[in-house]
Image 1 (tube, helix red, strand yellow):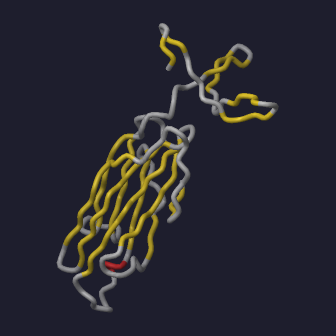
Image 2: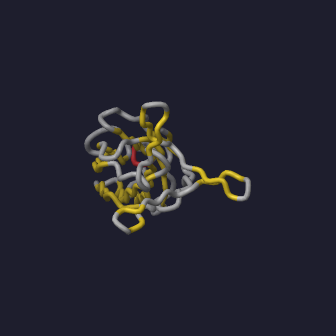
Image 3: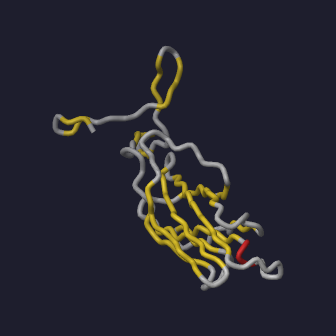
Length: 172
């Protein structure tokens, strides 16, 4: 699991879905943000946090409103926090990304704010999205195992494949 300022590549069939918004206001700053989630391959997922800040004070001795604190907890396991000490200029917008692993339906809690405390941070909770496409199982010996990838040989080269199944005359 990792934080980045670079967007991950989303696989075919995946898209960013809004999961919540945050708004933190006081006499020093206004922070607004939107959190999005997308499913990656296998049990991977990605977060996108788009955050905007407006500063009301320019006191050089009070720098908390320039700080950033983001964290993503999955299935009750505390994630590693992303922090930075200088958000940028008033009115600017930044986009942060997080990639991790979560089973379908696992609880995900995203913490967005300026520092790890109740007043300067908000939490958005949701469940991990469904996997992309159906699960495929293959029989290995006498045991069925979930396939992590499906490939097809096309003109002598192996390529990622999408599996479809005919259920009662309908391809799914």
